[in-house]
Image (cartoon, rainbow, N blue to C red):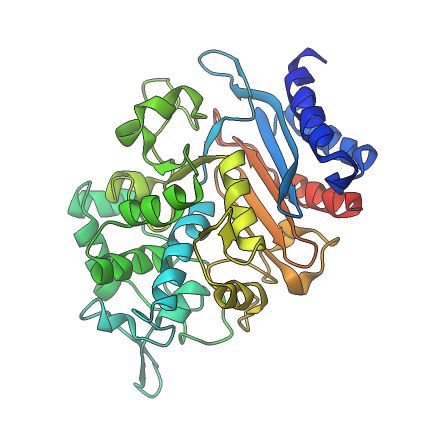
Amino acid sequence: MKRFFGGWLLVLVLLAGCGRTSGLDLQQMAQADAAIEAAIDSGQIPGAVLAVVRGGRTVYLKAYGNRQVVPDTIPMTTDAIFDLASVSKCVGTTTAILQLLEKHRIHLDDKVSQYIPGFAPWVDPETGEAVDIRIGDLLTHSAGLPPEIHVASYLERYGPHSPDDLIRHIAVELPRRFRPGADGYLYSCLNFITLQHILETVTGERLCDYVQREVFDRLGMKHSCYSPAATRSDLMPKVVPTTLQADGLPLRGEVHDPTARLVNDGNSGNAGVFAPAEDLARFAKALLGGGAFRGKRILGETTVERLATFRAPNGRSLGWDAESTSSGLKGEGFNPTTVLCHTGYTGTSMVLDFETGTAVILLTNRVHPYDKGGISQLRRTVSNIVASSLK
């Protein structure tokens, strides 16, 4: 019981502050604790942090297991800062793009070639018809771009830290797998790296700088940033490490995703955000609250309503997942027509239910130390338990 005492103490303090308005059945939530502890005991994850938002308040916040187990064992704490991996697409890139859409600086039906000259269309192999990829296709993963680049081959050809070469590679060299805007679905990190370059072309600044100012700083997400090893040394003691490197030490404070780290130097549309659960809870409260938190607005109410209800033919929303074949983490307990969700490769995930005003934020370090853990079932189980715990 010793390793869980601190987490339980914080949960009890939170619930004491919420009283009867916590909106959660604690007996039911004990099942979520047990599921996470079982995943730790079976070696799927070293540790985790679970946060639940309900009605604009953080009603559950608990740490489990260990932050790291190599080279030393360090217990998990609720303020641990995680590499969010692809959850960065939602918290960072998508939010920034939606802000530009609100300001009419870009539009969903704009051709990507308007912002990245020479960006190749899909060409029908039978008729020769050329169909342009549009911003909306990138956001919904219906553009037909490949999922990723082969990093080793790319580095051999272009070298590291070469974002300009990367976007040219995406623009003119990589294949288009299907007609953009079709019912097809091919999840692609390259979609969001392309969105990054559109934003940087329009704003004249780096994605990481824009998101820091317009999202993190505005919401008071004081412990969130891109690339803390390079930009926020004060945060490093709380950063959760990921996989072991050639020197036998785990990667920490640098983004795990190889394209984001080795090619885009940490400033990348597909990954790169580091954040603790409490900061993500602020972000979730803003979205569930119509785009604002404590008077600080990041998106308009109409934009949030559209985000929450939009469904592309492939089941994706704008930047988020909703009802696609990859959306199993949301479970079966929430109304599928009011839920947004997303996962991150490192073991992170968020589920937002706009009908009940609930967010489930589950942060794990499943890739530490050997990138072998699997948590698909755990995510679904925790979502279902939280849904069944709502009062």
